[in-house]
Each structure stands twice: as structure tokens, then as C-alpha cells.
Image (cartoon, rainbow, N blue to C red; front, side):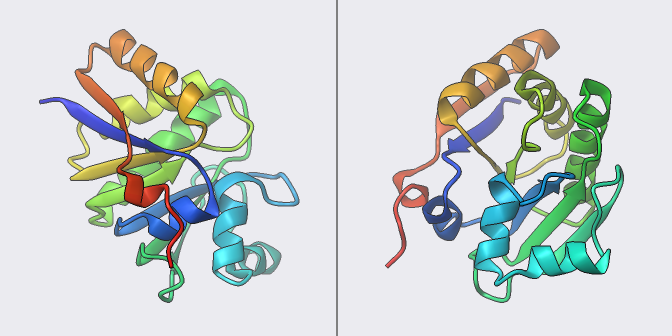
Length: 177
């Protein structure tokens, strides 16, 4: 079976338009928040920042928090995963942990952005390896499409995984009315 991964630029318009049941972001030690956590925080009126300040979510490895989107995003559920070290091994473990947690939570259509500021080849390899057997009906990886595609392709070749990478449908790239 071929693994299918859609790619979508990381922007407010993209996450507003994505029709998935679950959105996954990694929270590291960087402050202010960057990448997907910052966009989700904006859309959820500071819920991510409040969770960090309350100690409900930390950048520690293995940390996970589920937030309801409250209708502010099309995704009903937002998962936050901690990643405390940008070194290759902890990043790979965090990405695999996120994939398994999403699978166990019954996520079928997911969107994820890899941890901010980590080596893209490491995160891409860990995701291809973990998600190839997760059984998601739809996967969207958010980020810089120009760098994501080659990183995911290289990971698939290295792991001997049949992979189809394509740009998400135009609806995910257009702002909502």
C-alpha cells in the first residue's frame, strides 16, 4: 500500500481551511511560540499560551495535551506534544510518539507540522516510518512545501516505503470567507 501525504503551506489561511479531524503541533522551549503552535494559539485566543503558563503542557518529551478547538478551527481536536531537545534522537522519538498518540486517539484525518527549528530530515524520516502503518485516512504535513517534499521523498526511499507526496487541494490554501 502506498503512503499518501499532502503538503500544505503553514499559514492561518491554511489551518482555517483544512478539513481534518485532528491538528497536531509540537511545543518546544522557544518563546515566543513559533510555527504551528503560534498560529493555533492565535486562533484559540491564547489557549496554548495559557496551558503553557499553567504548566498543563511543557516541552518535556512525552508530554501531550488535547484541546478542543471550540469551532475556531475546522479540526475538532488540537493535540500538543512536547519536544524538549532539538537533537535528532529526541526529535525522532517525539514525532513517533505524536503519531502513535494520534492513532490511539482514533484520529482519521490529521494535519501536523514538524517541531520548529529541528532538522527536517530527521522529523520527516520519523514521520514516514511511524505513519506508514498508522492507518490514517488522510495526512497533511504543514510547512514549507519546497523543503518538505524532498525531505519526505528521501525518507521514503531510505525506508523503502512507497510514498505519494502531493500539494493539498486548493481549498486548504485559500482563506475562508
